[in-house]
Structures are given as structure tokens and as C-alpha cells.
Amino acid sequence: MIGIGEFSHRTGLNIKTLRYYHDIGLLPAAHVADSNGYRSYSASQLQDAALLRVLRATGMGIPQMKQALTHPHELTELLQARRRELDAQRELEDWALTQAPRWQECVSIEAVRTRECDPVHWAGVEARIGLKELGEDPQESEVEARFEGLQTGFEHWMAQLSELGCAVIPDSFWMSFTSDPRQPSVLRASYCVETREPLTQDIAIDGVDVVKGELPRRTEAFVTTPIPTSEEPPAEELAAARLPGGPLPHPTALALCRVAEQAGVDSAPLRQRAITLTKGQVIEHSLTLATH
Image (cartoon, rainbow, N blue to C red; front, side, top):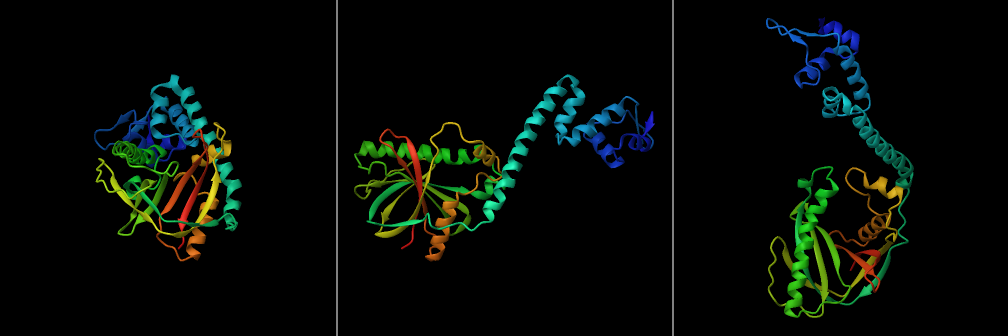
């Protein structure tokens, strides 16, 4: 048997790490003395310790390293999986290295345009999304799940509008996002449409709030960003999608926020609208903010 001190010297794993590996069952000592708890290792464990050092250098997690030791025939598959993870990470890092200088440049506000708008009636559904509940690095599936209930509520609400004979303006759907003044960590997300007349009926939808109102005569600042028509997103977009915290804001959206700040607008809702062709194919979307 090899004492823990000598085993540490031969393998390059320090004693603290060996004790930790023993406690979690990754590399348990072959013998533990009853009298003093002194750990000893077998000669065959030298190879296991060397393998663990190599696997740790790949960035492999504890569960995968344990799997490699307990199921040696799965090592190739585990290494291939880790290689795919590293390839994806390196692709993200290469993308970030090329993107960083661009984000240091001043965002141009030339893309921001303005328009005068007449008053319109609107109605829709709203949900409050607690940003703290999503954590610092939410997964895309978590974010989608939060909006799924809002979309379902909107579809049920639209069906009820149709049954009641309420007329809506075709292709007037928009999404609105604003923070709750009373709870800054809460995002108020709304799905809305323009209506020909004020909505007078009381409609209740489970899981969401029904909201309505009128947009007054106003000046709107807006930007328009094309949506790629290709079904296969470019490699650059695939890399950006892996960025912790989700995709970056579009530069034109940042320009819109700068114009709003210059106009003294702090809390007006940001509306996002899709512009579609007659067949319903989305070709671009616009972000709009009322400045007056």
C-alpha cells in the first residue's frame, strides 16, 4: 500500500485534492486506518490518478470523470462529447474576439427615424416576469417558458374577441416591454393589437391580465432591422446564441435608447412590431418608442 503523502508525490495530486476525491467517491482510498483515519492507496490507483489529472485538464466535470473510471468502455464517447463542448466554446471565444472592437465603437443614431402618429385604441394581455427568478444566466428554454403562457393567453383572448365580434386592425400586433416602476426587477411584457373601437367588454383570461387603452397623438422614434430569410442561421449567429445571458441587443436598438434619453424619455414602453408580407412571411421587425 502507498501512503497518501507518497501517493500525492507520485501522482501530482495534492493531499487536499486526494481527500476531496475520496470524500466524493471519485478516487476513494484503498484502505483507511480505523485508528487514525490514515488513507493508503494501491499501486493500480496510480494510473487512475494520472487519468484523472488528464481528464481534469480537459475541463471535464466530476460526474463525467467518475463515469470514465467506473465505465472505462465509455471513455471514448465521453472524450468526444467534451471535444464538442470545447469546439463550441472556442467558436464562441473566436466570435467574441472579433466582436469586442465593434462594441467599443460609438453606436450611430442615423438609423433612428421619426414619424407622426394619430391616436389609436389598443387592447391585449400582459404578464409580469420576475427577472430575479430567471437567475444571472437563464437558459433559453427558461425564457421561452415564461413567454409561452403569455402567448397562449393572447391566443385565447383573440379567440374571445372574434366570438364577441370585436374588430381589430389587420397586421397591427405588437409586443411591448417595460419595467414595473414599483418593482424594477419585474418586466411587464404585453401582446397587443389595435382595435377599431374602444374595448368595452370585460374579458378574463387565466394566467394573464387583460389590458387596454389609447395611444395619444404622438411622435414616435423607430428603427427597423431586417430578419434573415434564410432558414439556416449564419455561423456568427449560432455563436452569439451561446453567449451567457442570451443574445446581445441589436445596435439599432441601442441607438433608439440613446435618442429616447436625449428626448428625456425614461419609462415609455418599447414596442416591437413585425412587418409581414401578404402570405404572412416575416421580413423585418421594428422597435418603436414614443418620444412626445
